[in-house]
Structure formats: C-alpha cells, structure tokens
Image 1: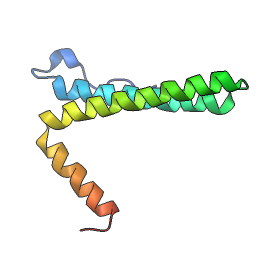
Image 2: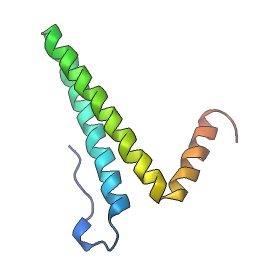
Image 3: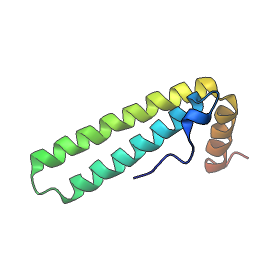
Image 4: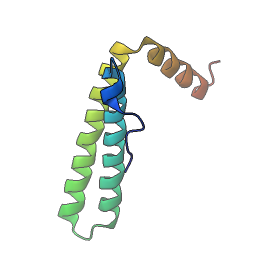
Length: 89
C-alpha cells in the first residue's frame, strides 16, 4: 500500500494534498479488491469484491471533482493529457 510522502501537519493549506492522498488510497483499494476478486473461488465473494471496487472508483471521482475545484493547473494538465492521448496536440 502507498504511504504519504509528506507530513500533512506541516503544511499551511493541506487540502490539495489530502485529496491527492485520498485518490491514491482509493486507487490502492480498487487494485486490492480487484486482485482479490480475481482469485476468489466463491462467485458471491467475487461479486461483492467487484462491487466494493466499483464504489471505490466513485470515491476517486468525488476526490477528483473536489481537487479540480481547488487546482486549476490540474484541470489544464488533465485536458492536455487527454488531448495528447486523443492525438490532438
């Protein structure tokens, strides 16, 4: 699992870092639950794990939406990245 690379207590305004750490934690959870589901023998357990992973993806969206409100540079860079992938330089 990931760990926080910075001490949030030392930051004057930690909101962006908190949101980014939340996204990382949720991504770790998605990966963990999807890996568990891949190896689960029980169909019911597999279904529950995949549903939980799906919920974690919603949490990622919530954190990202909040982050995009706070960090306009992030908005611009996400758009640049999307355009690069889509071949729109």
